[in-house]
Image (cartoon, rainbow, N blue to C red):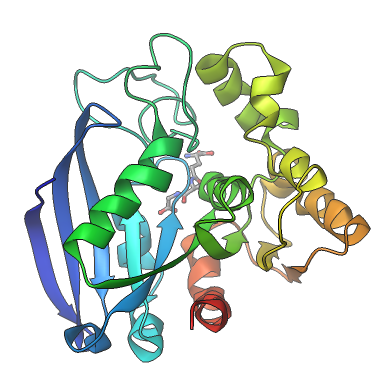
Length: 278
Ligand SMILES: N[C@@H](CCC(=O)N[C@@H](CSC=O)C(=O)NCC(=O)O)C(=O)O
């Protein structure tokens, strides 16, 4: 599949680029951003996929997290996909938490979403193939994300331990089938079948996980207005403790839900993933 370059900027000795491509999985044109660190000029490198949250595109993390400086030191490729299919012909909703910008990284089965909202397959199959076929990767990848994207990162890694070496999240929605953001999205995209909801719920997936465990790091700000109702990271921590799972939950005093929080700890997340990708 061919890529069209939209932007290219030198950043910390590497290159910050943006591409568009035709997605066969989502039946539309998609953009993604990629950071290629300086080491990329001479060697194949591992990839960290970053999944953003509600209302975001590929550009929120790229422009706000300050991750390029650390990726340049560590020799990590960063890939930032969009958060949903996009376009005038694509189903949408006026609310910020449904439709475009709110794909929830799942494969929709309900109308009018099913034709385009196949984000689970896009991230775990089409995008990995696209990146590996067009860039000099070493075939190793990990995954991280924020809020809705934190849900996506944990859920995709729990569903695909064959693909991802480690997972991390900022303020993730860990139990989407039990909280308003997730319940709304799942009802629209998946219908009312509780079993379908569970297949995309990190708490359920961790509780029933059978393969080799992989490391998880979660940061959660204590001043995050969304924490009590939507996020509840302790629910996942409790299951992890019962299963002796290597999960670290760090409660960061006074931090909120914003990219100022992400920028404050992104260095730790990149270093965490680098250990497992080396
Ligand atoms: N507009 C909404 C909240 C939208 C919001 O806070 N989005 C977060 C992710 S929330 C979970 O997925 C985000 O990352 N926004 C983009 C940014 O650059 O900050 C509301 O009013 O509640």
